[in-house]
Image 1 (cartoon, one colour):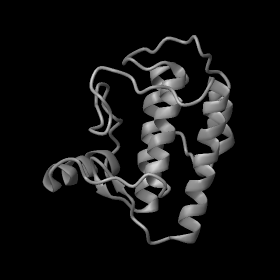
Image 2 (cartoon, one colour):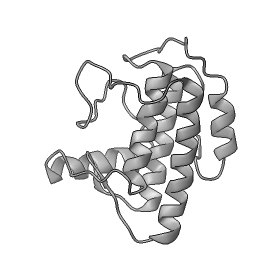
Image 3 (spheres, one colour):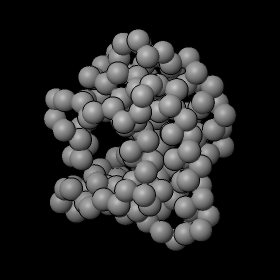
Image 4 (tube, helix red, strand yellow):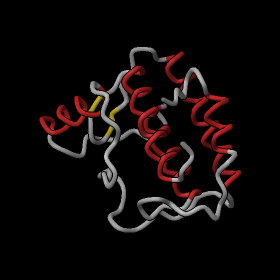
Length: 153
């Protein structure tokens, strides 16, 4: 399993294999869309992009149990409620290397956020408030899911 905290250099070594022209095994995303998507969720977890819970609390608790407290991988086809359906968000960065550099910065900011705010629980739109450790579990599974999308694992 990828560990974005303990093996961050490995994460970015894997991403060096990603090419802008790579085709996804599933979903609509291009490589750059995928990287920018990961950055958005890291921004949610590092306090820069606060969110509200987008689903009923009971459903969020079930989702949290399935994602965080099981060995389950994220299912192919899951759509986060903060994303548009059947279309891609506009790209923010001029190219894939710039998007990867921003992801690296957002992960460093994740570390800094929780170093300064260890008891914070930023809201995940589909699971509710998550601790640092719960966010790490989520990010590890989320990165793995998208790395498989582009045959990086």
